[in-house]
Structures are given as structure tokens and as C-alpha cells.
Image 1 (cartoon, rainbow, N blue to C red):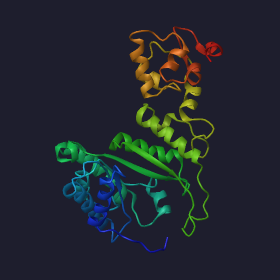
Image 2: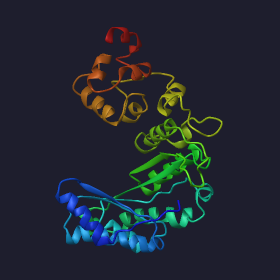
Image 3: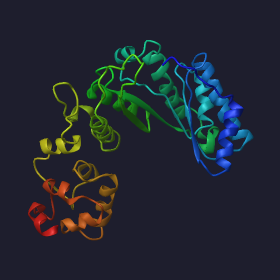
Image 4: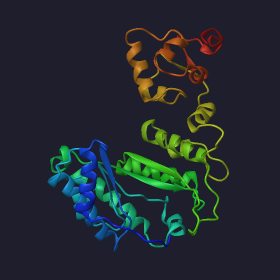
Amino acid sequence: RDYRRVTFAPFEFAKLFNDLYRSRIVDGIFLSSGIINGGIYSQDKLIDTAEILRNKFHFPGYIHLKIMPGAEKDQIEQAMRLANRVSINLEAPNNDRLQRLTSHKTFDGELLQPLKWIHEIRQTKPGHLAWNGHWPSSTTQFVVGAVDDTDLELLTTSQYLYQQLNLKRVYFSAFTPIIDTPFENSPATSPLRERRLYEASFLLRDYGFLVEELFYDSNANLPLNIDPKSLWAQKYIIEPIEINRADKMELLRVPGIGIKGAAQIISTRRINPIRELSDLRSLGINPKRTAPYILINGKHPIRQLAFSF
């Protein structure tokens, strides 16, 4: 919006944060900025601030350092030497959608390329050059629903970021219109859509799912009335799996079983086999969600539910 901006000088801002840190009011910092005189100039100011924190004030804690659109590769490496995490927001899943959001940024050159450089630096430069001896993780964020982007588009790009660029996490922000902006009359995006995207994103990142395995409606969006893992299980788990023999990847496909739950099942059954649904409940697993898709020692536990709760 068209209103007056205020800026901090790097030392001024670093000192402000350091005073808060020394007073035990804050533990870490998310260091970002609006664009001032272009992305390169803004990135220099962010790097200067982080350098003052690390080298003058000897701040040992968490710094999440934002990468500005159009930042140069050398600047990105400087930022990575100072931060625990770096990020640049793609905002949209591809160039066509981005151009409808803003004509001032280019998707491949200004936004995606820095994420590629971050990955390249992690792959080619020794970790001892970075803060605390290892390179920072990287993340991005999408605005959801402002320009008719589809879940299929968002998740396809997310899968590429996870598989090819090793992003730690993709964030989704449901669009909310703001007065006096170009999109003030656009409808808000349902928070439930944001939630479904997070659920699907975790399936891609942690559970071995692929974009094409998930189900979408006629508009290429995830159904809102059911989570994507449960919908997949309803369609594809035709024969229940044996809980005492299933491998990790099979367990991770079962609704109600997460990464920790699968590990606990495998660890527990090495000593004693799972005998009833209450054994799963003691491992922090929701038996009601899991029961329709598993066998316990060859028997379907669905009938046990009435006696287990």
C-alpha cells in the first residue's frame, strides 16, 4: 500500500535485538526487510545486520535470514555463513501465476534461482565454512488462492523443491484480502484448504508419496472433506496390512500412523508382537483411524473397537 515506510540502519537494528536478547525477552530472530533500492542493496543491509550480531555482539542463537528477490550468488553464500536458516518466498507455483500477483518479480531468475544456488552451495562447499559447522536449512512460502492457483500446481512445485533442492519445509499462507491493495475485492481462501495443502506436503516430504498418487477434484484441488492420506487409503488399501510384518513404508501409508508411530511399532514388535488395538493406543497411535486398514496376527481388529473404548 502507499504509506510511509521507516527503515533501521544495520547497527541500530542489531543493537535493538541484542538488547532484547540480553534482557531475555527473545531467543532468536527472523531477519527480513521490504525492498529498499532493489534486492541487492536490501540484501547487503540484512547481511550487515547479521554480521554485527554474530561478530560484534557475539550472538550465538538462531538467525533466520531472508533472501531478497534478485540477490546475487555471493550474497547468498555470505548469508548462509551467518544463518541457521535462509528462505525466499516463491509466492506462486510458477511464472504465469506470479505475473498475476506481481509484475515486478521474475519466477525463475529472481526467486527460484536463489533456492538453486542455496542447494548448490550446500552440495559443493564444505560445511565448516558455515555457522556452527554446517550449512543452514532452506524454506519457502506460497500465497494460496489469490490468483486461481490450483493445489496440483502448488504441490507439483513443492515436490520439485523437496526432491531436487532439499528444502526443509514449504509453507502455505491462505490468501486474505486487504483494503487498498489490488486484490481487495478477491475472495479469501479457506483455512481448511491451507491445512489440506500442509497435510499433502508432509506426505510428499516424509511419507514417500508422489503428487500423482493424491486425489484432486475437477478444479485440480484437494477435496476439503477428507484428509489426503485417508482418501488415498480408502481408494488403495484393498487388503489390510499385517501390523506385525509390515515394513516402514507400508506402515506410513496407514491413516493414523506417523513417522514416530511407525518407528515405535517396529521397535516394539521386535520384543513383543502387537496383540490388540490398545497396544497401538499406548504408542500414541489413534486406533479408530488405523483399525480399518490393518490386521493383528491375521485378524481384522475392527470388531475389537467396541471392546477397546
